[in-house]
Image 1: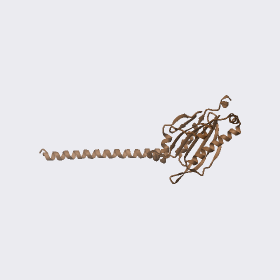
Image 2: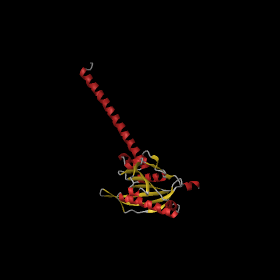
Image 3: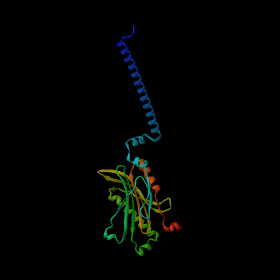
Image 4: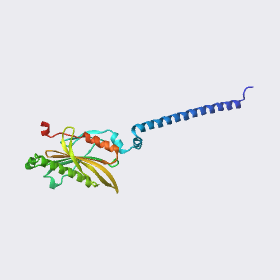
Amino acid sequence: PEPSEEEKMLDQRYREEQEQRKKQKKIILTLAISGVLMVATLVGLGIKYGFSYLFDTATGKESLELLEGEWVESAYGFPPVFIETPKVLKREVIEIPEELKETIFSSTNFRYISEKAGLYIEIGNLTYNLTQEEQEQMKDEQYRASKILESSENAIKSLERDGAMDIIVKRDQFITPNAAEGLKSFGNYNLKNDGDTIPMEYVVFTFNSENVYQTIILSWKENDDYLDQLSERVINSIELVPDAEEEEE
């Protein structure tokens, strides 16, 4: 006999249930395969780049984002300092006290600070009004070296004013890729910040061109591989216009 209407409906329902189960199995299988592939990919990337790198990428670590972001090549001040940085340095015009206006012609700073990453970059240009006698003195190498050293010490004092303590200072000659010579002061210090003590590294480059002193300060948090790579890239990018005498030679 022909199946009743009720039997037909039960059979239809059975087939639909079977189809639904097949679909669910396919979905579960697809998700399982995707999960395995994802884990395998993460393990592969972890082996290649390091698991800490993957974690820092996923959590958006500031120093890593600065290192891998779009960097900026620019010139600051006059004579210009050519440098590559992870962000544009903001210009700050410093008012000169009345009692120093006869000595100092102009003072300009360019600065970038990221407290979250623990990074500080500053370029300072200080132009003096030199007397005829001082212009003659600047031709003496020892006198010029003493003034460059004085400028470097002033830069380190500015770190102290910003909370640096226990500063260790080492010094060496520094020559840019285009042969401009300057003084390199470097070391480490402890930074007091909201009751915490943060170990920091720093480097100060000081250059002199006639009556202009140029200072580059770079300071970053210790024990951060991304900041170490970042600072090295910044330092390797520094270039200045050599003195006229050097250009003639």
